[in-house]
Each structure stands twice: as C-alpha cells, then as structure tokens.
Image (cartoon, rainbow, N blue to C red):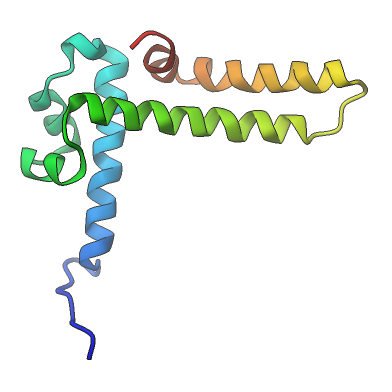
Amino acid sequence: MTPTTRRYAGMSADDRATERRTRLLEAGLEVFGTAGAAGATMTAICAQAKLTERYFYQNFSSRDDLLRHVVDAIAEEIRAAALTALHTPADTVEGQVHNAIAAFVTVLTDDPRKGRVAMIE
C-alpha cells in the first residue's frame, strides 16, 4: 500500500517542494543579480521568494550554496544555447563557433542579472 500525500491547491507535496525550490532559485537570481553577493541577505532572498527561512534550509545549506545552484543553472542555460548553435548549420566551422559564442553572450546580455551572477558574483 502506498502512502497518500496531502494535496493543497491541487498540488502534491513533491510538486509544492519543487515549486518552492524554483521560487528560491528565481529569487536568488534576482537578489544576487541586482544587489550582488555582498548585498544578498537571507531575509531579502526569502522575501523575494515569499517564503520563510524554513523552506530555504530545506533546499540549500547557505547563501553560497544557493549562489552555486544559480550559477549552475546559468551555466546549463549557456551550455544548451551553445550546443544548439553548434548544431545549427553554418557555412564554415568558424561560423558555427561564432554562433556558439554569440549564443553564450546572448544568454548573459539578454538578462543582465545572469551576466552579473555568472561573471562577477
């Protein structure tokens, strides 16, 4: 027999946990990307996510841990964009490389918060 989990607003406990983690990652990007690591307080991150510190510590061990996860998410986005560009036909190998570099730069410039977090923080 499988245990039943309580549903809130039509969401399972796992779905709610995933949603909270996503909100914290988004809040981390916003706060680190605007206030910088030095100005990113736990209070500011939790306020931005509209969550309590309890949920923060269920997902991350520290602000630095959250920052690492935010940077990892940005790196994964860059990787995916660059690979897509590399697999898009171009006239020359140099053209493919140019497209991959352009994809990298685009990720960091389309959302300046990502550029700041990935390159400065």
